[in-house]
Image 1 (cartoon, helix red, strand yellow):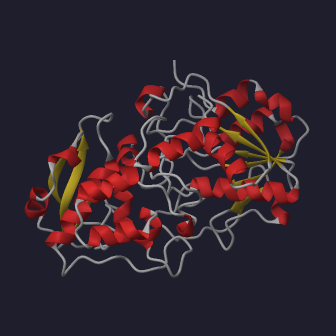
Image 2 (tube, helix red, strand yellow):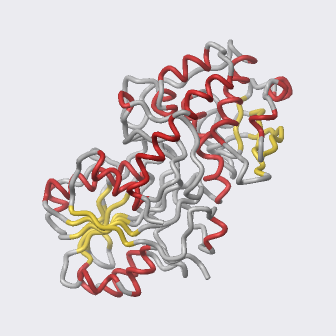
Image 3 (tube, one colour):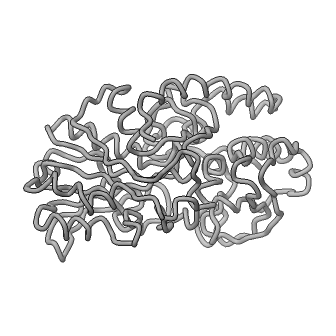
Length: 389
């Protein structure tokens, strides 16, 4: 029997608690029930005329926009005749005019368990708006596709808080959107009127395939669960001139650039950093984004053991090997990146300026990793009071 998401339980039972409330819904194309009914249609059916506004995150309410920093406009749902507000536009937080239309904001977003994925920041901005304008906010919880046990990467440095890093947590954090909301509400002193509709049947040890739920693409470059499994590490290429595979049919699993000597790079990576995966040398030609229309040499990551695989370890080791091999060709990407116009994108992604410097200077990869392993116990203690499962 599949896991039941917060939306499934809202449909079967919890909608009764919101009768007579003017409802807003933050969702996208992945906000579906176990039988693939969209949240908008669920609420339309069970809450009748109470749905008054729709909100969409990065990539648009229907997930149309492929790349980062491509804003989407507001619109109208022609069937329901209600507004569709973009929260990835000139503002990333609901305005007073938007919130005036509703009493309760339901948040139904499929996260991918990685700090830089912007849905958690959008949720946080909605929580702050709910507090400011005296509204209730309800999180319809969903599984973390990467499970709720393992963590990866260093803790985010406070001076690098941004839209791709709202709080001091590791890259792979091992908590759900509902748990994140509870943590944000107290630790960031938001203090909004918050509640979470928990899932049924989800266990922290579960990877996505074990939930029994269908994979509805949460953003255009997350086509399959494996995309999410590699994402905590592979997202770092966004801060470089290496293609992260956008413009291919397997983004993030595939990465490279025209100048890579894949054989030389592979020889420099210790097998310790390739646990649970195989790097296969490939060539590809991106149809958009970096190196559009040019033949890139690179790798595709094949996961052989999800429990052993640590995407962040693998990607950091790969990054070191690429820099060592191609000092003259490799470059860090310049700003802007996700509404930050001065700091280097790689610093925002890695979440620590010193980590970039250490990698660039060629320091021992084991020493680099030790620095972030120490933060796990700190985060485990921090998140403990907010765990729901």
